[in-house]
Amino acid sequence: MKVLLVDDEEEFVVTLSERLKMRQIDSTVALSGEMAMKAMNEDLPDVILLDLKMPGMDGMEILRRTQNNYPDVQIIMQTGHGSEKDKKEAQRLGVFDYLSKPVPIEKLIKTITEAYNKKIKNEKSNISV
Image 1: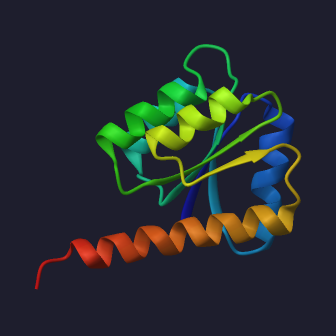
Image 2: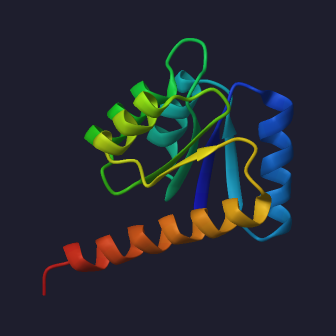
Image 3: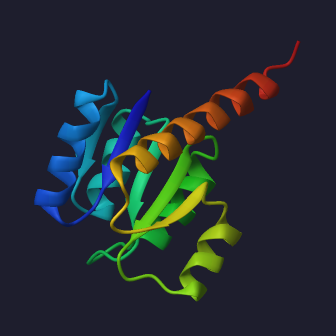
């Protein structure tokens, strides 16, 4: 399982990546929307853990672009500053889950695993016999 962590709070996202790696979850860090798109073009992740509020390209724009270009990638949006309107828009765009920070690590791992399992199930159902 490959996970891309996208968040402009460097200390937070690097620490989260280390915590995931301790639990045998391979993760890459992108500190901006632009870095995230570049990372996806180089090595497509299975799951993206995406911050909503970032300077430049925000989480909603990354969500839109990813759903258009890589519809099988599962996206989990997390934010400390989201609104109900943001949540509804993310759901309309097809986000796997929308979480409010701080997210307990156990819940985050469970959600990432569920998103990955959905991706695998979708891929299997898309394979024609």
